[in-house]
Image (cartoon, rainbow, N blue to C red; front, side, top):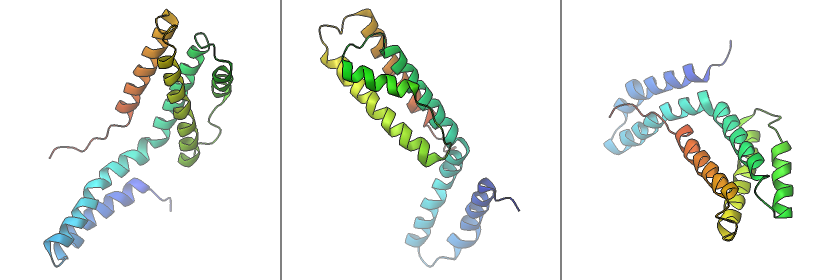
Length: 152
């Protein structure tokens, strides 16, 4: 038998709705179960797309870092950017991808801070383009993380 998380979570959702919640003694207990049940579709979505989202996000940040190599002059930051650009996701386990994602997001934050504090260079076209690329990625990341909760 192949374990199928989506099938299992669907069955759990049905059992909670049809068997467990109606047989609980009070409205508080029922509300607790219903709250957890409402989150199951979100968990199912994350299981389905979790690896893809993380791989896309990590690749997008590495692309921003590659662009940054043409604009940043701080030697320490350039070295970190080069290391990140050369890196890749060797393991597709969510925990490993999350580790990479957190590291890359930290570097993105440092890069953005660097741009904000380089006021003299801030007006340079390469820096402006880099700042826009960072904001585009942050917006795209937000869209990637959206969940469909259906109609209420």
